[in-house]
Image (cartoon, rainbow, N blue to C red; front, side):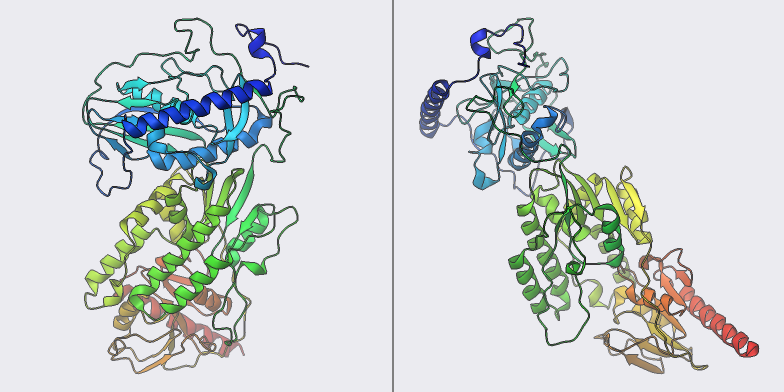
Length: 623
C-alpha cells in the first residue's frame, strides 16, 4: 500500500524523485560549494579550533547547558543499516568537536571545525534528508550533531549566527521538547555557526545509546534561550510540524532510481569480541555466552620457535557455527612480538613495550570494526586504547577484566616504594597520565564486567557501580602427582620471580630466623642480598616442577593478576598463603594475608606448616 501524503505537503513534493531533479541539485550544490570555498579562502569567516592542547582552561568550568538525544531509537527498524552508519559518522565527527574551547567573540563553524567528510577519514554511508526522502549518502546523519549543537548553544545563551532548518523529519524520532533547535548542514555552504561574547567550551560524548553535548563557561548565560520549534525554515510561526520523510530502504516506490534493497544486517546489530591474552576462564565464558560473535584476536607468534613449550593463544578455541571467520592482524601481531622480544630483558622498558603492543593491536582491531557492531566484548588491556580511538562510542561494552586499573596499580606500587625506597623495580615504570585517564573513562562507561579475580571484581564494582558484574570461577589445572614434603626443614615455594611487587621483600623479612628452605619458581633478583639470612635458596627459572616437596606455596604480592602457579598448587593439594591481590578469596586451601604485612605473613606460613605437619602425623597414625 502506498504511503499516504502528509497534510501540508504538495502533490509535486510527494512525487517520487526524478533523475533530472537530482542532476539539477548536484549541479547547483557543486556551484554553491565552489563559490563558498572561494569566498572562505579569500576571507575566512571562522577558523578551526585545536582539540589537542594539553591545557584546557575551561575543563572545570560550570556547565551552562546540556542536551541529550537518542542514537538508536529514531528511524524505522528496517532502516537499521542507515542508523548504524549514522552512529559511525557521529563517532568520527565527535573527535573534531569534543573539548573545543572558543575564545570570546570568536565563531565556531560546523564545517570549518569538522572538515570535509570523506571515506578515507572513516565516514560511511548514513542517512540524509533530501527532497522529503531519507536517502543513503556518505557521512549521512551528521545533522543529529548539528541539531544538538544548535540546541545546547541556544540553551546556553550563545548566538546562532547562521542556521538552516530541515524540510522533513525522521520517522519514529523521539518527541522534541519545546526548546529543540532544528539545524541542518550540507557540505560546505549550508553551515551552522555559533558565537558568544565570552569564552566557552564544547564537550561531545557518545554513550551506548545517547549523544550528549555540554557547554561550559565561567560567564553566566549571556542571553535567554528562545524556544524554536522543529518546523519548516520557510514557515516561521506556522502551526504545522515538519512532514514525515520517506525512507529509501523501506519506501514502496521500488521503481525510483534512489531505491535500495534491504541490507543483510540484523536489527540489533552484531557482537564483536576483541581478544588479547588467552585464559581458560574467559574461554569458557565466551563459549557459553558469545558463540555467534565475530572474533578478533592476535596471531600466535613464537619468535623463539626452537624452544619447546605448550601451544598458547586463542587460536586453540574452535569458532562456533554462525560466527564470522576469525580476524587476526598479522602485521600488528608480528610488530608486537618483535618489539616485546627486543625489550624483554629491560626491566624499565618491558612494561612500556607491552602497552605499545596492546595499542598496535587495538588500532588494528578498531579498523576492522563495522558500523553494525553495536556490542563489544573487550579484553581489558585493549580498553584504554580503544577509548582514545573513539571505538567505544555508541556501543555497549562488556569488559573481560583481568587486572586492576592502572591508577590503582600505580598507587600500590608507590605505597610499596615508600616502604622499600632502595628497590628501584617499584619505580621503574609508570603509564602516561592520558592512558590512565582513558582507562578510567572507559571503565566508567562499561555495561558489564566479567572476571574471575576477586579483588578486581570488588575494585571495578566501585568504579562502575551501574555495570553488571559476573564473577567467574577459577579453572584449576589437572592435578599432577608431586613428591611429598619432607619433615624438616620445611620447603617454602615462592610462586613468582624475586620481585618486590610480588612480595619478595616481605617474604625475605618474614623468613628471617626461621629454619627453612626457599625455592623461587621464577628468576632471581638483581639484589644479591635479598635472601641473606635464609639457609637454602633455589631458583627454578620457570623450569621443572617446582612444587615437588613443597610444604606451602606463598605469594604475598602487591600486584598479581594471573596466579596460575597458585592454582597449580591448589590442584596438587599444597597449602597456599597469598595476599588479597592474588584474587583467590573464597577458594578452599588458601590462607589470605594483607600485602605488606610481614608479621601476618610469618604467622600464616607457620600455621600452614604446622597444619601440614599435623595432617602428616594423622596419616602416619592411620597407616
